[in-house]
Length: 215
Image 1 (cartoon, rainbow, N blue to C red):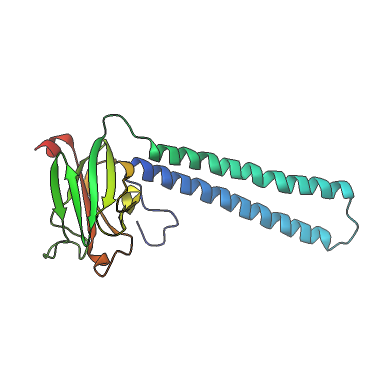
Image 2: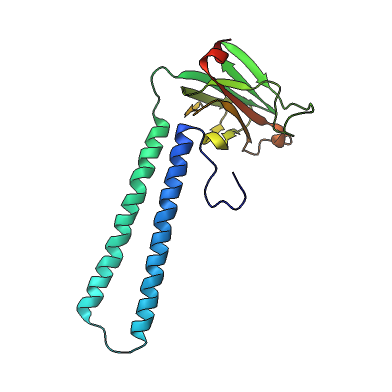
């Protein structure tokens, strides 16, 4: 992400990359609509300043086009949006499952029958209020099924660069699938007001290849 950029940050997961492309598509379409309306207003102002009566047939045609055109544009916006939402809900076969449990005020991960407690790291050398003592390690280029819940209050597990933001609700299991496009370290935080130490629940996801994951 750079200062002065009009677009979103680069997507680092399948869903986030699709969301960025959808954002660019809708922004381009919106700019086209904006300038189309501006040109029509200018032409109508110039033509209207000369006076004269309008034809009834021309008004009917204008009303018809003015109603039909937004419907067509909404269809062009809705279809890719529905496809993207469907992609986010599909659970691929063979995906690795990780259980994410929110606590006041730390995260618990259950991976391969192993429970990992993740607290904010107060040591020197990392990002302030963003690093943790135990990172969540997942496979890159593989779909990972995140099953989220909470044991006390509502938390929200959010990693913006991966396009993930899911509430962790007590007594309920929420599910989201993420596929990271490459190795790297990705940071996030709890995005739900969960108490006095809400700002001290960082999330760190480390995507690694299969060799590093098994080692």
